[in-house]
Amino acid sequence: PTGDQWWRSAVVYQVYPRSFADATGDGIGDLQGVIQHLDHLEALGVDVIWLSPIYASPHDDNGYDISDYRAIDPLFGTFDDFDELLADLHRRGMKLVMDLVVNHTSDEHPWFVESASGPDSPKRDWYWWRPPRPGMVGGLPGAEPNNWGSFFSGSAWQFDQRSGEYYLHLFSRKQPDLNWENPAVRGAVYDMMNWWLDRGVDGFRMDVINLISKHPDLPDGVVPPGALYGDGYPFYGQGPRIHEFLHEMNERVFVGRTGQYLTVGEMPGVTVADAQLFTDPARAEVDMVFQFEHVGLDYGPGGKWDPREASVLDLKRSFARWQEGLARSGWNSLYWDNHDQPRVVSRFGDDGTFWRESATALATVLHLQRGTPYIYQGEELGMTNVPFEGIQDFRDIESLNHYAEAVGVKGERADVVLAALRRTSRDNARTPVQWSDAPHAGFTTGSPWIAVNPNSTRINAAAQRGDPNSVFAYYRGLIALRHSDRVVSHGTFELVLSEHPTVFAFSRTLGDRQLLVLANLSSSAAEYDVAAVPGWEGAEPVLGNLPDAAPAVDGRLAPWQAQVFARA
Ligand code: ISL
Figure (cartoon, rainbow, N blue to C red):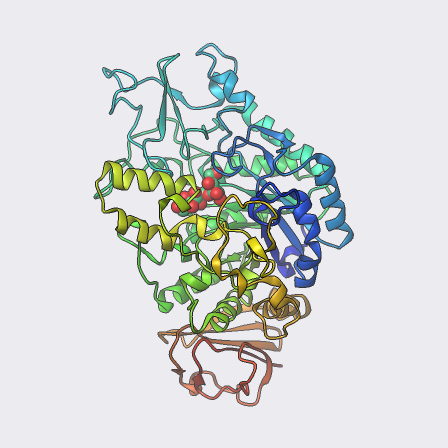
């Protein structure tokens, strides 16, 4: 929400504090752990840190269930630690963006405790309470107010014995949804946001913010084939008042402030057309959104738990559609990974033979698009998915609930469910950052809350920091290029070789200056038609991910080779 759009040339780095670095030895990452590793982030060259939730929380969903928006969870530290972190970041020229989780609170938040105290509570209407289905006995199967399923398996409704009513929770039963129809709820959220901005933070990443406006009738959804529950998305995804709410939030929180801020709305299921509205500066809603299209391309008909290979063609077409859709107004955020997604090098790359090559090729095609790139902790080291042995190794509520429902309720085969979890579980992203080849990867001196990936002896920051051919060094180069070359931050995007099955190629143009990005996203050599990229012979090589290759636009790319050329 600032006119100068400073974030066009910025790169954001996400810290998931629980898994970043543990300074106290309790096995859980903390704020002092982040402070101790700021040199790493400064060396990488990122501009903004997005900090996943550090607020007081019962940690049913690792902090995305907040019981006090204005307190630091003692697990992570104190306000002294927080102020130290903020000051240190600002001293180093970096900004801090907080996670804003206001679709729901924890059921242990005082607002909900009061709301649940009875139908006459002054805060009853702060959440979505509803009586059982007419003629049904509350608490019995099928008596829920509607048929919606929760994102974390089971019904989206929890029965409250005391009042005989249900409350809505799109996520865990410990994450009751706030009722944004109530202006007092919105006011309380805006006050809290202003309080954090007054403390000096530089913006917000807004958790599932496109789900906050529910259709007040809460109608039943269609039950997809094989599913136990109805799909409520049509009644809360981009709900009736979503644009009004986000505009109001901007008005009540950012208008009149003079700093440089960043707002990014996390928006599962958002379309290009929606995003054009959300990010059009003239509408003053959010700066950019996280869309989910590219991270759904390897979902089968059964969705996330039914994974398959995504094709490079699908990936290219999807990215290109978003580039085109937000070319004239609005803005893209660009990401492969976050704390909810499996590791990109394992998912869309080759984490075996071509580990380094594929990690860097995938980074190239993302970072050189038009938009603001986000790096998830460990991605800059090429961290991979994790060989979890059994269900006892998983920690994530989404994974555990899914396993219990699939195996225990639907009777699916445990080995099949586990195989899918190994590919898609959010825990793949949540194992500790691999700092060194020391025990527990140098993450903790204690016993880590989730296992360390056994490949930490090979893949770690200490091994990569001084190596000019490391994944880390390559990310640093990509970030530096965005900072130094306005064609990266401001140029237009055009897909080239659009029908090629494995080469992802595009040009960027700003005035007379042009970049050509070529990347072979496959483990076999690729050939392409040089005539389709006319005039690039002899162009200046800017970047390449194969240290021994002589860069040339010659119709050939080695497995996972990426090359970037410039011409004026
Ligand atoms: O991870 C997912 C894929 O199945 C999503 O459903 C995910 O839950 C969704 O993207 C919303 O994510 C955000 O809100 C959740 C929290 O668990 C996630 O960690 C957070 O990023 C509820 O707060």
